Length: 360
Image (tube, rainbow, N blue to C red):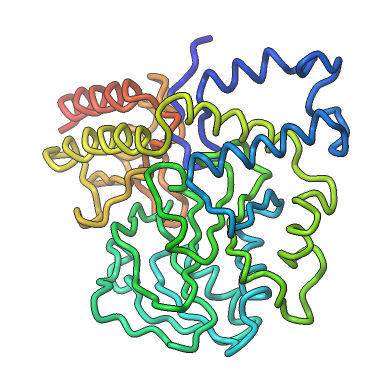
C-alpha cells in the first residue's frame, strides 16, 4: 500500500529517511545484536544515542552551553505544572499571554502554585489573532512570562517575541519547534512535546537556562524538579529510550538537509501555497488574520457541516488523511510540519480545487 499524506496535528508524519533508517536498525543497532527498544539505558550503546541526540539538537537550534537540554516524559501538559513548580519561587506570580486552548491549560495549572496574570488575550475573537505586543505591561517582579509560540488548534503564531526585559520568557513551542530559526537566548525556558516536529509521542524536550535551575518550590515532587533531571543527564529513571533515538535521527536528518534555516524556507513555501488558495477560494476560507497565521497548522472552514463531511470523506479516500479540525472548533485543519513534503501540499491544493469546482 502506498503511504498516505498525513496532515495530523500530532502524532504527525516522520521523514521517510528516518523511518527507513530505524527499520534498518530495528533488529540490530550498529552490531549490538539488539534493538534500541531492548537495550539498557545504562549501556554504552544507549549512552551514545542520548548524548548524540543532545549534541545534534544543540547544533540544530544553536543552544548555548549555559542552557541544559532535558529529554523527559509526561508531554507538554506536565510542563504546565513543572514550570510554575520550578520557577514560581520569588514573587510567586507569572504573566501570561492567552492565545488559545493550550495557553488556557497552562494558566489554569499555574494558578495552583501561584498567581497567574493574563496581560493580554485574543479570546474575544475565538483566538483568531495574536494580541498586539506593543505597549504590553509586564510585571517587573514576575518570575516569568509565558507564551505559546504556535497555537496548534487555532492556527496562529507569534511572528515577534514580547520584550520581557530581565523577566525570563517561557515558551510552549510544541508545534513549531525546529520549523524555523529561533534565538534560544531570547528565552529562559522552552518546552515541546515531540509528536509534531521532533519524533514520536512519549518524549518531551525541555531547554532551560541553568541559572533558573535549583530553586523549585518545596512541594515539588522529585520527578518534577528540573534539577533532578539535570543532575542525572535525563536518566534519573528510564527515559523514553526509543523516542529519543528517533528524535536523534530526526535531528541528524535536519542537519543533512540544511538545518532550521532550510526548514523555514520550505515551510514558508508550503504555507503560502495553501493560504494563497484559501484566500482565493469561494468554498473554503481561513478564519485567522493574515499577519498571525501559523506555518505549521492551517485551519480552514466551509459554509456548512454537510460540506465538511463530504470533503473529509472524499479527501480521505484520495489518500490525504487526518484533515478533520480539532473537536473543539470543527472545520478542517492541515498540519504541515517539517516532514510534510512540498508535493503533499501541492497535491492537496489540487484536490481542493477539483472539489470546489464540483461542489461550489
